[in-house]
Length: 287
Image 1 (cartoon, rainbow, N blue to C red):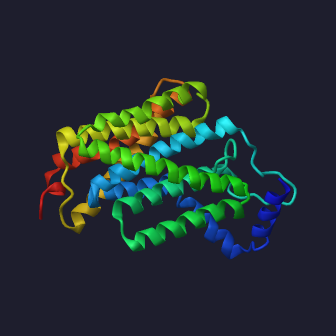
Image 2 (spheres, one colour):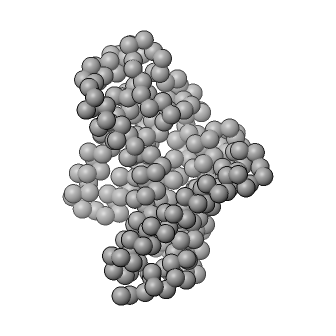
Image 3 (spheres, rainbow, N blue to C red):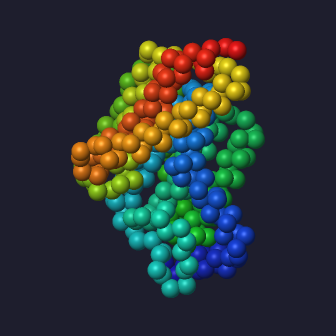
């Protein structure tokens, strides 16, 4: 591991307050809050089919990642002499592969495959590399962690994108459950892995919402800017309420409650909010 330690100490030799803040912001861009905010905008206001495809690829990848972490069980560089680690709250559990690198790769690569424009391909590449560097700069991952995160992210999204295209073309969206079901095994094998439980729940709810929305709702992304901004604000507010209100109300152990709570969040994004917007006709009708 000496060569990896040398890479970390070299990257951190450039540390200064400006770069500290820059890479903190970059690493946040691969976290739950940012991804949900962007996905919700596309789902409710811009391009729901792109959001469904990207969201499914991203969420299932974030179930895949903690499963791999528990399988490989490699320790982080946190506490190693010569390494200064920051933002430790984003670095629970094992190290390999990097969840942030895999999340960023999954999100941006899926977006690039869906949009297929040169500018998004360039932006995706830059963001993936920057997130990977940020995890080294913050001293919470080894070099092989971020490389593996990028590799597994690319591999997973390529597979999901092909499967999603097939399911849409053949009108067999229920086949997507074949991706979710095996993760139930990981859930029972590692019931105390919080990132796995959260992502597994969100994936179940999100996919259930996609299927319900396509079959019964057929929500239209239309309206002028004020309607879209109002939808977005109401949708995010309700999402926060769901996340906060369910936590003390559910009479289950923490991990089961998290599974249910994030399942509801995933369902809200893909179907619950679109249903509400249709009921509030002034938010979904053409101006």
